[in-house]
Length: 222
Image (cartoon, rainbow, N blue to C red):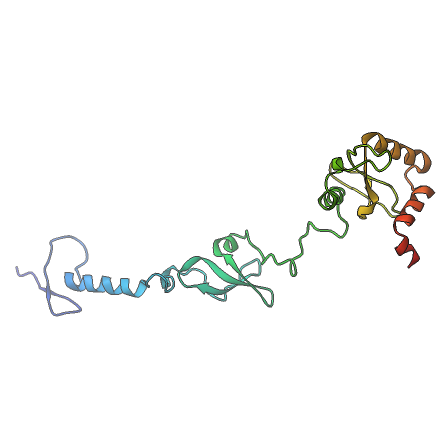
């Protein structure tokens, strides 16, 4: 019995039967190697000239659920790209962070205000600003007795005081005006608060209103 000779579909060379089971080979070994190399060349791009076409999963113009749009890929950089946020804001971001939803906008405060920032500063914020601008209270003299101060105390002189609603300082009255904080020692601080409580209760006494007017003479005159 004569075994039929197989011919390569690319070249006229005959294909030797290997005796293995399975579909008959279509190409000879040299042609198989040439086809494999050709496929590799179409997929490969030299480093620094962009990623391989088959490896690009996120193309320019793609919009993500957060609203960010991939504006431009960076040749040779598979981790970062330029993203458009809104109409005109374009920022360099990490692709994986955008895909995973960890980065949802360009973080520009002009377009995305920090939700933690409110119009009225918190109780602790006012005290931190006072210490940052004038130094620790322990380095200053007590406003009443002249001894060493321990902390900055609210003088209760603001006609429209604020009240901390949550946190460890919940219920504490304060003012956004740094002039309403004065360095006091522990004893004078306690006496000042007790006196205010006896004379005005939860409200504000005429003495404290006069104190506020005296410290804001220019505003009252206007």
